Length: 180
Image 1: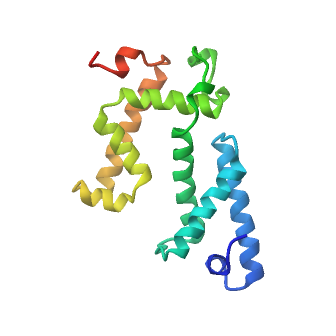
Image 2: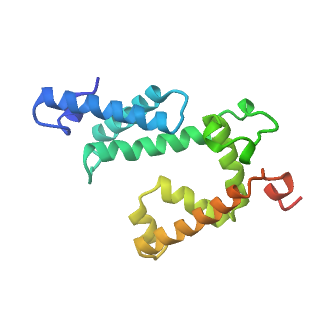
């Protein structure tokens, strides 16, 4: 159970704060279930634990506590996606019409997405990672772009990635490493 400092961010009344905390936890579990994660409750607890730790360290929260926790949950999901054990993926993972994306396990989908991301130019891949893991305002300032221009550029990269996925073919070894 979170400490009083964290709960006070939900509501001044302790009972109402506990109720709102429980609702947020359920929503985070549902978020991870929709993302088809293996342990949605563990991931929700991980996100909340990180939020509690950040509050204890004196983090400045510029949104609601729920929005803050969702931001952390998104990072936890991306980390979980990257850390999925590749040995769980079958060697010949079928994609395309024979196996729609919604039928892939979270591990299979994560590994397949990583393979497609590898087909993007390195600067596009890095931009996507940074856009989803870092503060977008700071990233826009660093890249000397407006937030809207940054968003448009990320949309272009996502569109390119979607085109690769829609082609319905798995990346080949030569495409993953053009130096060989």
